[in-house]
Image (cartoon, rainbow, N blue to C red; front, side, top):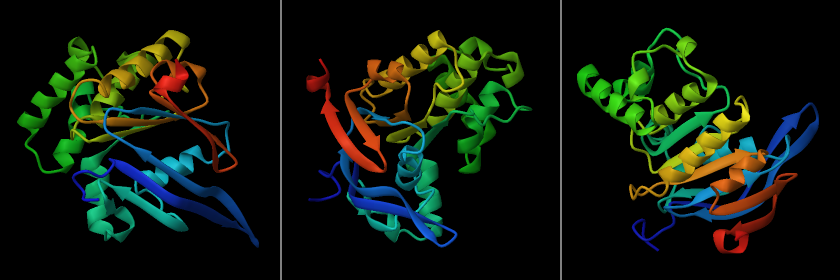
Length: 237
């Protein structure tokens, strides 16, 4: 299989353990899965089940203890530190529960940050940022700072920022955790729409929020670091 016809993301027998004192504690155990373009994959798991560890491994924020993580057919564990940093910046869009916006910057400036770090001019990055804010329904709030926005609006800014480098994979870790019911539902719907826009993207979302099922094309249940079930959209209907 070449990189062209490979799945967007593939995990092959991935395990991850941490050492606490004299004990080795498994966080992931022999996880194998693939994610293809156009999918919204929801990892459903209670706290402590390994879902954040899995996202960190996929996003090259952590390394597996064993197994392989392939992105478009390439093993990201073989990348040196510089190439891994470029991979995180250009191929992955991160959406976190805690938003992680810079409070002193406007919404547009926050969205522009990834492009500015990649060497783009402020003028071009700002133009793209405003376009992305319009896409997530916040064009009129481009010059507002996070303190002037609601929780749902802040998370929309975070989604726009995650799209700034046009990454093929969005990783969302509990994106509705700090939101009210309606705002959470809106964010889940937005993430689902991102995979339907024809731009060649996939979303991998970890949550224990049942609202996330509304956007899922696949639901994967994770427990004690192992995949317990993997249901496609046809099975979910």
